[in-house]
Length: 411
Image (cartoon, rainbow, N blue to C red):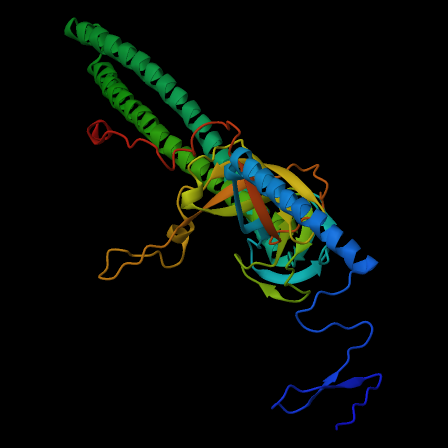
Protein backbone atom coordinates (compact mmCIF):
# COMPACT_ATOMS: atom_id res chain seq x y z
CA UNK A 1 0.00 0.00 0.00
CA UNK A 2 1.47 3.38 -1.11
CA UNK A 3 1.49 6.46 1.10
CA UNK A 4 0.03 9.63 -0.56
CA UNK A 5 1.38 12.99 0.63
CA UNK A 6 -0.04 16.42 -0.36
CA UNK A 7 1.56 19.71 0.37
CA UNK A 8 0.82 23.31 -0.63
CA UNK A 9 3.11 23.21 -3.70
CA UNK A 10 2.79 19.67 -5.06
CA UNK A 11 0.58 16.62 -4.86
CA UNK A 12 1.18 13.01 -5.65
CA UNK A 13 -1.16 11.74 -8.34
CA UNK A 14 -2.23 8.14 -8.26
CA UNK A 15 -0.85 6.42 -11.30
CA UNK A 16 -2.90 4.19 -13.48
CA UNK A 17 -2.27 0.51 -13.26
CA UNK A 18 1.00 -0.31 -15.03
CA UNK A 19 2.21 3.39 -15.16
CA UNK A 20 4.79 5.04 -12.89
CA UNK A 21 3.67 7.69 -10.50
CA UNK A 22 4.24 11.39 -11.54
CA UNK A 23 4.54 14.51 -9.54
CA UNK A 24 2.62 17.71 -10.52
CA UNK A 25 3.47 21.09 -9.17
CA UNK A 26 0.37 23.04 -8.25
CA UNK A 27 0.20 26.55 -9.66
CA UNK A 28 0.14 29.63 -7.58
CA UNK A 29 -2.95 31.63 -7.09
CA UNK A 30 -2.11 34.22 -9.84
CA UNK A 31 -0.75 31.70 -12.41
CA UNK A 32 -2.43 29.51 -15.00
CA UNK A 33 -1.29 26.57 -16.95
CA UNK A 34 -0.50 26.97 -20.61
CA UNK A 35 -3.60 26.51 -22.71
CA UNK A 36 -5.93 27.17 -19.80
CA UNK A 37 -8.07 30.36 -19.86
CA UNK A 38 -6.86 33.07 -17.52
CA UNK A 39 -9.14 34.47 -15.01
CA UNK A 40 -10.28 37.96 -16.18
CA UNK A 41 -9.03 40.93 -14.13
CA UNK A 42 -10.29 44.57 -14.24
CA UNK A 43 -7.00 45.90 -15.78
CA UNK A 44 -6.95 43.27 -18.52
CA UNK A 45 -10.56 43.96 -19.37
CA UNK A 46 -9.92 47.71 -19.57
CA UNK A 47 -6.88 47.23 -21.83
CA UNK A 48 -8.79 44.92 -24.08
CA UNK A 49 -11.59 47.50 -24.42
CA UNK A 50 -9.17 50.32 -25.25
CA UNK A 51 -7.51 48.14 -27.87
CA UNK A 52 -10.81 47.43 -29.51
CA UNK A 53 -11.50 51.20 -29.68
CA UNK A 54 -8.01 52.48 -30.67
CA UNK A 55 -7.42 50.12 -33.59
CA UNK A 56 -10.35 51.42 -35.66
CA UNK A 57 -9.58 55.03 -34.67
CA UNK A 58 -5.95 54.70 -35.77
CA UNK A 59 -6.98 53.05 -39.01
CA UNK A 60 -9.41 55.92 -39.65
CA UNK A 61 -6.71 58.51 -38.93
CA UNK A 62 -4.28 56.78 -41.28
CA UNK A 63 -6.96 56.70 -43.94
CA UNK A 64 -7.74 60.40 -43.44
CA UNK A 65 -4.04 61.31 -43.54
CA UNK A 66 -3.57 59.34 -46.75
CA UNK A 67 -6.61 61.01 -48.25
CA UNK A 68 -5.42 64.47 -47.23
CA UNK A 69 -1.95 63.79 -48.62
CA UNK A 70 -3.47 62.58 -51.87
CA UNK A 71 -5.66 65.66 -52.09
CA UNK A 72 -2.69 67.93 -51.38
CA UNK A 73 -0.62 66.19 -54.03
CA UNK A 74 -3.41 66.47 -56.59
CA UNK A 75 -4.16 70.13 -55.89
CA UNK A 76 -0.80 71.61 -54.74
CA UNK A 77 2.26 69.41 -54.44
CA UNK A 78 2.38 68.18 -58.02
CA UNK A 79 2.61 71.82 -59.19
CA UNK A 80 5.57 72.66 -56.93
CA UNK A 81 9.05 72.31 -58.41
CA UNK A 82 11.76 72.30 -55.77
CA UNK A 83 15.53 72.09 -55.58
CA UNK A 84 18.13 72.36 -52.88
CA UNK A 85 20.82 73.25 -55.44
CA UNK A 86 20.32 76.97 -54.88
CA UNK A 87 22.49 79.71 -53.40
CA UNK A 88 22.32 83.36 -52.48
CA UNK A 89 24.22 85.52 -54.98
CA UNK A 90 25.06 89.19 -55.37
CA UNK A 91 26.62 91.40 -58.05
CA UNK A 92 29.86 91.91 -56.16
CA UNK A 93 32.18 94.63 -57.43
CA UNK A 94 35.86 93.70 -57.56
CA UNK A 95 38.04 96.76 -56.97
CA UNK A 96 41.35 96.83 -58.86
CA UNK A 97 43.80 99.71 -59.36
CA UNK A 98 44.15 101.20 -62.83
CA UNK A 99 47.64 102.58 -62.21
CA UNK A 100 50.75 101.08 -60.65
CA UNK A 101 52.36 102.36 -57.50
CA UNK A 102 53.00 101.91 -53.81
CA UNK A 103 50.01 101.95 -51.48
CA UNK A 104 50.18 105.03 -49.29
CA UNK A 105 47.00 104.51 -47.25
CA UNK A 106 44.16 102.00 -46.82
CA UNK A 107 41.04 103.75 -45.57
CA UNK A 108 38.72 100.76 -44.96
CA UNK A 109 38.66 97.54 -42.98
CA UNK A 110 37.08 94.14 -43.60
CA UNK A 111 33.28 94.01 -43.21
CA UNK A 112 33.01 97.80 -43.15
CA UNK A 113 29.92 99.45 -44.61
CA UNK A 114 30.77 102.00 -47.30
CA UNK A 115 28.83 104.33 -49.56
CA UNK A 116 29.37 104.95 -53.24
CA UNK A 117 32.29 107.36 -53.71
CA UNK A 118 33.98 106.68 -50.36
CA UNK A 119 37.78 106.50 -50.50
CA UNK A 120 39.03 102.92 -50.20
CA UNK A 121 42.71 103.09 -51.12
CA UNK A 122 45.32 105.77 -51.88
CA UNK A 123 48.39 105.15 -54.08
CA UNK A 124 51.49 107.34 -53.92
CA UNK A 125 50.78 110.09 -56.48
CA UNK A 126 54.05 112.02 -56.66
CA UNK A 127 55.10 110.59 -60.01
CA UNK A 128 51.66 111.18 -61.46
CA UNK A 129 51.55 114.75 -60.15
CA UNK A 130 54.90 115.41 -61.87
CA UNK A 131 53.49 114.00 -65.11
CA UNK A 132 50.53 116.34 -64.81
CA UNK A 133 52.90 119.29 -64.38
CA UNK A 134 54.94 118.22 -67.43
CA UNK A 135 51.79 117.77 -69.49
CA UNK A 136 50.59 121.20 -68.41
CA UNK A 137 53.89 122.74 -69.52
CA UNK A 138 53.65 121.01 -72.91
CA UNK A 139 50.11 122.26 -73.23
CA UNK A 140 51.21 125.82 -72.54
CA UNK A 141 53.95 125.51 -75.17
CA UNK A 142 51.47 124.17 -77.69
CA UNK A 143 49.13 127.05 -77.00
CA UNK A 144 52.03 129.47 -77.58
CA UNK A 145 52.78 127.71 -80.89
CA UNK A 146 49.19 128.15 -81.97
CA UNK A 147 49.22 131.80 -80.97
CA UNK A 148 52.47 132.32 -82.88
CA UNK A 149 51.01 130.69 -85.98
CA UNK A 150 47.92 132.89 -85.77
CA UNK A 151 50.03 136.03 -85.44
CA UNK A 152 52.27 134.98 -88.33
CA UNK A 153 49.22 134.55 -90.54
CA UNK A 154 47.97 137.97 -89.53
CA UNK A 155 51.39 139.46 -90.29
CA UNK A 156 51.54 137.69 -93.61
CA UNK A 157 48.15 139.01 -94.57
CA UNK A 158 49.45 142.50 -93.82
CA UNK A 159 52.49 141.82 -95.96
CA UNK A 160 50.23 140.67 -98.77
CA UNK A 161 48.27 143.89 -98.50
CA UNK A 162 51.54 145.86 -98.54
CA UNK A 163 52.70 143.95 -101.62
CA UNK A 164 49.44 144.67 -103.37
CA UNK A 165 49.86 148.34 -102.58
CA UNK A 166 53.41 148.24 -103.92
CA UNK A 167 52.13 146.65 -107.12
CA UNK A 168 49.54 149.40 -107.50
CA UNK A 169 52.23 152.06 -106.94
CA UNK A 170 54.57 150.37 -109.41
CA UNK A 171 51.79 150.19 -111.97
CA UNK A 172 51.14 153.92 -111.51
CA UNK A 173 54.85 154.67 -111.90
CA UNK A 174 54.93 152.56 -115.02
CA UNK A 175 52.01 154.43 -116.51
CA UNK A 176 53.73 157.74 -115.81
CA UNK A 177 57.04 156.46 -117.19
CA UNK A 178 55.37 155.33 -120.36
CA UNK A 179 53.67 158.65 -120.80
CA UNK A 180 56.93 160.53 -120.19
CA UNK A 181 58.78 158.28 -122.59
CA UNK A 182 56.15 158.77 -125.28
CA UNK A 183 56.09 162.52 -124.73
CA UNK A 184 59.85 162.91 -124.91
CA UNK A 185 59.94 160.60 -127.91
CA UNK A 186 57.58 162.96 -129.75
CA UNK A 187 59.43 166.08 -128.60
CA UNK A 188 62.75 164.58 -129.56
CA UNK A 189 61.50 163.92 -133.07
CA UNK A 190 60.52 167.61 -133.35
CA UNK A 191 63.76 168.72 -131.74
CA UNK A 192 61.90 170.25 -128.80
CA UNK A 193 63.68 167.98 -126.30
CA UNK A 194 67.26 166.93 -125.98
CA UNK A 195 68.38 163.42 -126.65
CA UNK A 196 69.58 163.16 -123.06
CA UNK A 197 66.12 163.93 -121.79
CA UNK A 198 64.70 161.21 -124.04
CA UNK A 199 67.21 158.69 -122.78
CA UNK A 200 66.39 159.57 -119.20
CA UNK A 201 62.67 159.04 -119.85
CA UNK A 202 63.40 155.72 -121.52
CA UNK A 203 65.50 154.56 -118.58
CA UNK A 204 62.76 155.61 -116.15
CA UNK A 205 60.29 153.53 -118.18
CA UNK A 206 62.50 150.48 -117.92
CA UNK A 207 62.99 150.98 -114.18
CA UNK A 208 59.24 151.28 -113.75
CA UNK A 209 58.65 148.07 -115.67
CA UNK A 210 61.33 146.24 -113.61
CA UNK A 211 59.93 147.66 -110.38
CA UNK A 212 56.43 146.47 -111.27
CA UNK A 213 57.74 142.98 -112.00
CA UNK A 214 59.60 143.01 -108.71
CA UNK A 215 56.64 144.00 -106.55
CA UNK A 216 54.39 141.56 -108.38
CA UNK A 217 56.86 138.77 -107.60
CA UNK A 218 56.96 139.90 -103.97
CA UNK A 219 53.15 139.90 -103.82
CA UNK A 220 53.03 136.43 -105.31
CA UNK A 221 55.60 135.18 -102.79
CA UNK A 222 53.59 136.72 -99.95
CA UNK A 223 50.44 134.99 -101.11
CA UNK A 224 52.25 131.67 -101.53
CA UNK A 225 53.63 131.88 -98.00
CA UNK A 226 50.16 132.26 -96.51
CA UNK A 227 49.11 128.58 -97.05
CA UNK A 228 52.42 127.50 -95.48
CA UNK A 229 51.61 129.52 -92.38
CA UNK A 230 48.07 128.19 -92.33
CA UNK A 231 49.42 124.62 -92.44
CA UNK A 232 51.75 125.52 -89.60
CA UNK A 233 48.75 126.81 -87.68
CA UNK A 234 46.90 123.51 -88.21
CA UNK A 235 49.98 121.61 -87.06
CA UNK A 236 50.18 123.78 -83.97
CA UNK A 237 46.47 123.21 -83.34
CA UNK A 238 47.00 119.44 -83.62
CA UNK A 239 49.90 119.68 -81.22
CA UNK A 240 47.68 121.63 -78.85
CA UNK A 241 45.01 118.91 -79.02
CA UNK A 242 47.65 116.24 -78.38
CA UNK A 243 49.04 118.18 -75.43
CA UNK A 244 45.52 118.65 -74.08
CA UNK A 245 44.87 114.90 -74.37
CA UNK A 246 48.17 114.14 -72.67
CA UNK A 247 47.26 116.46 -69.84
CA UNK A 248 43.83 114.81 -69.53
CA UNK A 249 45.45 111.37 -69.36
CA UNK A 250 47.93 112.57 -66.77
CA UNK A 251 45.15 114.11 -64.67
CA UNK A 252 43.05 110.96 -65.02
CA UNK A 253 45.95 108.80 -63.87
CA UNK A 254 46.45 111.17 -60.96
CA UNK A 255 42.79 110.79 -60.02
CA UNK A 256 43.10 107.01 -60.33
CA UNK A 257 45.62 106.96 -57.50
CA UNK A 258 42.57 107.31 -55.25
CA UNK A 259 40.32 104.22 -55.41
CA UNK A 260 36.68 104.88 -54.48
CA UNK A 261 33.76 102.59 -53.78
CA UNK A 262 31.81 101.92 -57.00
CA UNK A 263 28.57 101.07 -55.15
CA UNK A 264 27.07 101.06 -51.69
CA UNK A 265 27.97 97.88 -49.86
CA UNK A 266 30.23 96.03 -47.44
CA UNK A 267 33.99 95.55 -47.78
CA UNK A 268 35.18 91.97 -48.18
CA UNK A 269 38.20 89.96 -49.32
CA UNK A 270 40.59 92.81 -48.55
CA UNK A 271 44.08 91.71 -49.54
CA UNK A 272 46.21 94.84 -49.59
CA UNK A 273 48.37 96.58 -47.02
CA UNK A 274 50.17 99.90 -46.77
CA UNK A 275 53.50 99.88 -48.60
CA UNK A 276 52.61 97.17 -51.11
CA UNK A 277 53.28 97.71 -54.80
CA UNK A 278 50.10 97.16 -56.77
CA UNK A 279 49.68 96.65 -60.49
CA UNK A 280 46.71 97.46 -62.73
CA UNK A 281 44.18 94.63 -62.72
CA UNK A 282 45.16 93.18 -59.35
CA UNK A 283 42.17 92.44 -57.11
CA UNK A 284 42.72 94.33 -53.87
CA UNK A 285 39.24 94.06 -52.32
CA UNK A 286 35.57 93.53 -53.10
CA UNK A 287 32.43 95.52 -52.38
CA UNK A 288 29.32 93.41 -51.77
CA UNK A 289 26.17 95.49 -52.40
CA UNK A 290 24.18 94.31 -49.41
CA UNK A 291 21.26 94.01 -48.84
CA UNK A 292 20.63 93.72 -52.59
CA UNK A 293 20.95 89.99 -53.25
CA UNK A 294 19.24 87.36 -55.38
CA UNK A 295 19.09 83.58 -55.56
CA UNK A 296 20.40 81.34 -58.33
CA UNK A 297 18.68 77.95 -58.32
CA UNK A 298 19.85 75.12 -60.59
CA UNK A 299 16.75 73.20 -61.65
CA UNK A 300 16.78 69.97 -63.61
CA UNK A 301 15.83 70.23 -67.24
CA UNK A 302 12.87 67.95 -66.52
CA UNK A 303 11.43 70.57 -64.14
CA UNK A 304 11.33 73.50 -66.55
CA UNK A 305 8.25 72.70 -68.62
CA UNK A 306 5.78 74.78 -66.61
CA UNK A 307 8.15 77.42 -65.24
CA UNK A 308 7.63 81.00 -66.37
CA UNK A 309 9.18 84.33 -65.33
CA UNK A 310 7.08 86.06 -62.72
CA UNK A 311 5.97 82.95 -60.84
CA UNK A 312 6.21 83.09 -57.03
CA UNK A 313 9.03 81.24 -55.30
CA UNK A 314 9.25 80.10 -51.69
CA UNK A 315 12.79 80.32 -50.33
CA UNK A 316 14.06 78.52 -47.25
CA UNK A 317 17.56 79.59 -46.21
CA UNK A 318 19.49 76.90 -44.39
CA UNK A 319 21.12 79.48 -42.11
CA UNK A 320 17.71 80.75 -40.94
CA UNK A 321 15.40 77.71 -40.85
CA UNK A 322 12.62 79.57 -39.05
CA UNK A 323 12.26 82.22 -41.78
CA UNK A 324 10.61 81.59 -45.15
CA UNK A 325 11.06 84.23 -47.87
CA UNK A 326 8.93 84.87 -50.92
CA UNK A 327 10.72 85.66 -54.15
CA UNK A 328 9.87 85.87 -57.84
CA UNK A 329 11.23 83.91 -60.77
CA UNK A 330 13.09 86.56 -62.74
CA UNK A 331 14.91 84.93 -65.66
CA UNK A 332 16.53 81.81 -67.05
CA UNK A 333 20.15 81.30 -68.05
CA UNK A 334 20.76 81.11 -71.81
CA UNK A 335 22.39 77.67 -71.47
CA UNK A 336 22.88 74.87 -68.98
CA UNK A 337 25.55 75.13 -66.36
CA UNK A 338 27.70 72.55 -68.12
CA UNK A 339 28.03 74.77 -71.19
CA UNK A 340 29.68 77.50 -69.11
CA UNK A 341 32.09 75.15 -67.36
CA UNK A 342 35.82 75.21 -67.95
CA UNK A 343 35.61 71.98 -69.95
CA UNK A 344 32.18 71.71 -71.59
CA UNK A 345 31.02 68.13 -72.20
CA UNK A 346 31.64 66.66 -75.64
CA UNK A 347 28.98 64.02 -76.21
CA UNK A 348 30.01 63.21 -79.78
CA UNK A 349 32.42 60.53 -78.58
CA UNK A 350 32.40 56.76 -78.63
CA UNK A 351 30.73 56.32 -75.23
CA UNK A 352 27.73 58.30 -74.05
CA UNK A 353 25.88 58.37 -70.76
CA UNK A 354 22.83 60.55 -70.53
CA UNK A 355 22.93 62.89 -67.53
CA UNK A 356 20.10 65.19 -66.54
CA UNK A 357 21.32 68.74 -67.01
CA UNK A 358 20.58 71.71 -64.81
CA UNK A 359 19.69 75.24 -65.86
CA UNK A 360 20.49 78.22 -63.59
CA UNK A 361 17.38 80.21 -62.74
CA UNK A 362 17.62 83.70 -61.27
CA UNK A 363 15.16 84.45 -58.48
CA UNK A 364 14.60 88.02 -57.33
CA UNK A 365 14.49 88.65 -53.59
CA UNK A 366 12.82 91.87 -52.38
CA UNK A 367 15.17 94.21 -50.56
CA UNK A 368 12.66 94.65 -47.73
CA UNK A 369 12.50 90.92 -46.91
CA UNK A 370 12.54 89.81 -43.25
CA UNK A 371 16.21 88.81 -43.58
CA UNK A 372 17.32 92.06 -45.23
CA UNK A 373 20.96 92.72 -44.42
CA UNK A 374 21.49 89.22 -43.06
CA UNK A 375 21.65 87.26 -46.30
CA UNK A 376 25.17 86.68 -47.55
CA UNK A 377 26.24 85.47 -51.00
CA UNK A 378 26.97 81.76 -50.95
CA UNK A 379 24.35 80.73 -48.38
CA UNK A 380 22.46 77.54 -49.26
CA UNK A 381 18.78 77.87 -50.13
CA UNK A 382 15.90 75.52 -50.92
CA UNK A 383 13.72 77.01 -53.64
CA UNK A 384 10.17 75.91 -54.42
CA UNK A 385 8.38 77.39 -57.44
CA UNK A 386 4.59 77.33 -57.71
CA UNK A 387 3.99 76.60 -61.39
CA UNK A 388 0.23 77.16 -61.09
CA UNK A 389 0.83 80.91 -61.50
CA UNK A 390 0.56 82.20 -65.05
CA UNK A 391 3.90 84.03 -65.08
CA UNK A 392 4.94 86.43 -67.82
CA UNK A 393 5.52 84.25 -70.86
CA UNK A 394 7.92 81.63 -72.07
CA UNK A 395 11.36 80.81 -70.70
CA UNK A 396 13.01 83.82 -72.25
CA UNK A 397 13.38 82.13 -75.61
CA UNK A 398 15.76 79.49 -74.25
CA UNK A 399 13.55 76.42 -74.45
CA UNK A 400 10.78 75.87 -76.94
CA UNK A 401 11.71 78.97 -78.92
CA UNK A 402 11.31 78.88 -82.69
CA UNK A 403 14.56 79.05 -84.58
CA UNK A 404 14.78 81.88 -87.15
CA UNK A 405 14.38 80.99 -90.75
CA UNK A 406 17.85 80.47 -92.18
CA UNK A 407 16.84 81.85 -95.56
CA UNK A 408 15.58 85.02 -93.91
CA UNK A 409 18.62 85.20 -91.64
CA UNK A 410 20.96 85.13 -94.62
CA UNK A 411 19.29 88.24 -95.97
